[in-house]
Image 1 (cartoon, each protein chain N blue to C red):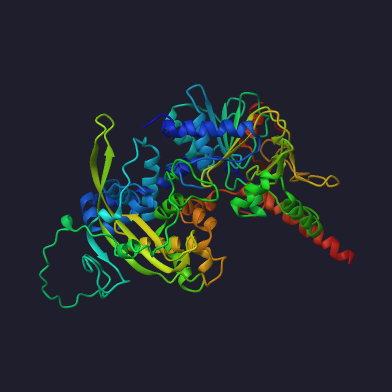
Image 2: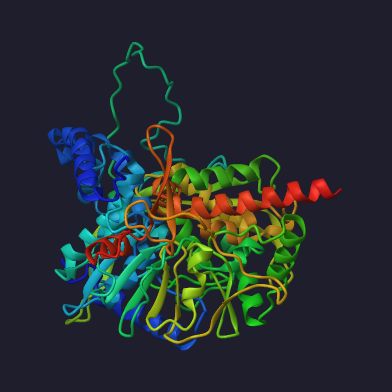
Length: 276
Length: 353
């Protein structure tokens, strides 16, 4: 089998698409998208990006819903390392490539790192306009009025947008972008990020990117606060953290506890003795 | 305090795969050739949806997935990605097919005759065996049986609407097009489609969501030669044969680009013996390119390029449908918090009323 599974032509095509995506932050680039031995919808977009950019020098981290040990993360990490032999890690700081599903690590990313997002629905306009041809036209005209109307209607009916994860962002004051289904908690981390952020949607055959130090802001009205998930008064039952995204876990008695969603963050705090 | 198991995915996957292997490995006793010969229609479905013409690999894939044919197609697609493309073969013409079966429901008699060939169309579906009459099977060889489409006389008389030809066919496996979609790409999508999906879409046109009302002008199953330009000698060489199904169905009349009134046709083509799929494809092709004559209105599924281009691929639809089994606790947590605050907002507001 070839290094990193994909044939060289496929890698070349993906790399070119990545370069185009980086050159136009937030713009959606089409690519052929090869079928992988992993099912469509299970991270094949992110996987193709990782396979196209990875080399022997890289150290790989894969997380799914914040966790390195989650079944799909394990599966993807094992697959990549079986076709590349690269070093893998669970430590955010040690990784040069981090493939993620639906979370941005708690620890700030650094220059030289690449965060690869798995994306189910690449175009944020899908919520208001499912037709791909019309979506393209709306982006070309920077016409995001339908998104604003949705935001207005939600705010008037429910006090805030009903969008929870996948909250729309404006990239470089030009393109409205789907940040993948990360919680709103992670949205502010996209802007001015030191790392390169790549987004891949395998089934939908799209790639887009946010280069380092790019302006990314959630779509919101000037006089409205951007509210993120709130864990006030709660702390991780394991490391005691009060400033991380927490998972709500019910035990067999129905009692609820909270744990850091980012398992590496939690482990690192325990190792450094920063726990309660 | 209960320990929250944050790790253990590795073990869990291993165990799960072991349990699964127990089921699937039972297929090891099956011989590849028995599958290829004995379950020929399963093989053909898999090579068609997997879009890789290899009956041997298809039989391996069917065994690997213990008979789950969509999963078997997925194996072929994944394998396809690891193969380097060497080149593109010479365009094949279905008129050159060495026929095993060729029928036309548009005409009572056609040049070369109705050739029923192997078909279960008139089979009585009973699980018990009726008394079998001894039948002497006619000697038949498809070798010299090459007959042009039954619609050829109409085409020669310039009665059939022709769509503009593309200079170079698109290749959806190397470049997925954006709208407006080239017809070659649309046909490729349909030829690789999940059989049940395209059948359902085709069926909608017959029940009022469109009015294609097709007549099968020509349905053929047989073998086609694949030729390739030799990279060194530059000679045309035959590198193999494929078995395929092709269908031309005839719709109502319509105006062509010159304003002449012509009969419309739709085309279906798949690897292997896949009659239902090829017929469905020809019907959807008819609906897509003759939308304005559809009695069922313009906004029908079968005539909507967005619907056809993005919803028929079995590997994609089944993958995404199954992805809902993945953990979604972060997204669910965010949904839950939004729900709680909206609920609170509604309560406060109703009190104010």
